[in-house]
Amino acid sequence: MTPPRYVARACTAAGLATLLVGAPVPTAAQSSQERTADVAAGAAPSSQMRVYLGMWSTHVRDIKRGLSNNWLVGVGWRGWYGGTFVNSFGNRSFTAGIQRTVARGEENAIVPFFQYRVGVVSGYDERFMSLASRVPILPMGQLLGGLETDRAGVELGWAGLVATLGPHLRF
Image (cartoon, rainbow, N blue to C red; front, side, top):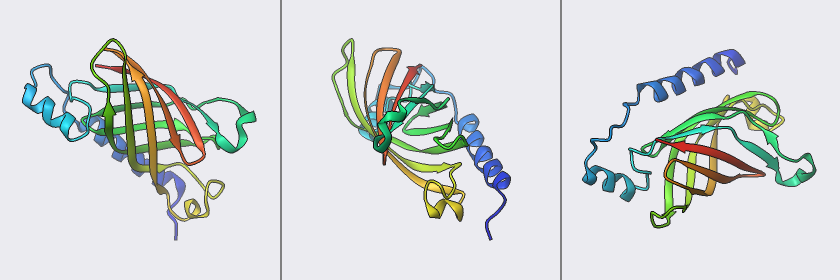
């Protein structure tokens, strides 16, 4: 028996809120050894919290639809990410998981990077896949590439049949 949708959404929202609010705020007093360990583990330096404000997507099999605004709001910190967006079916989705850096250019005015995300996502139904009609939370993977400056950046992402474009701010 599948729990009612509002129960699954409330549990997911509570979990994300705990993750986002319960995480300690990074400080500028972090030692250089801790920063080096973060980067060696594949995470962005912990002093580089990312705030995601907006995401546009298109479906690879239906490019004619053009770009759609998905109204993303999210955060990435110390190799973790979480956020909420409106999916292609018009449902509010929540996502959380790990985000790791595979390659990063030298610290210049504009820095290229390549990352991946692995986590979970909610808010989909059988129109996405038959499993989604029975399970409220699905696994999710995404490849990311982008450019960033000292305080801002843009990511191009790919997850299955969807390509995304999204800006972020770094703090």
